[in-house]
Length: 138
Image (cartoon, rainbow, N blue to C red; front, side, top):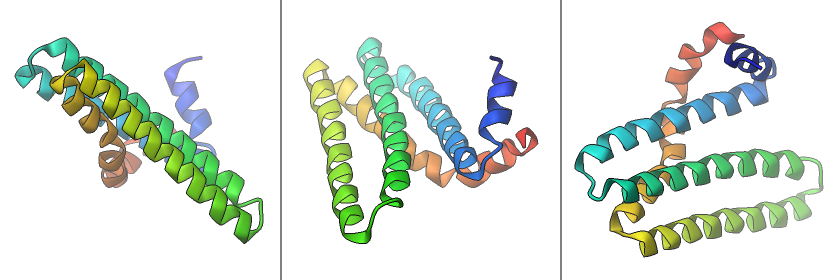
């Protein structure tokens, strides 16, 4: 399936449209962090591994948040609160594991993994820009 078909299919529903915009933001911010960091980071392969791991972790966290909210809306309030708390702790543990593994690889990988994990935050801040950028795929 082509990229244009995939973008049109994902942009047909509002909830997957926002998910698409956030994924595009994660990828773009990850590539920018990768390009800038490869100029300064030594050894480069450690930084590359860190950013890729952190960006993959950010993409996983985004999907996990989407799935968690979707499931929490289908149960009562008491169960939903506990479920949301448990999934939030799970995402924090995943972030910690990514950073610990990156730390044992090297300092450059640790810095790259933190920046990669922050790509989700940057994507959320740049969401209005990506909303305008992807407006032709409606």
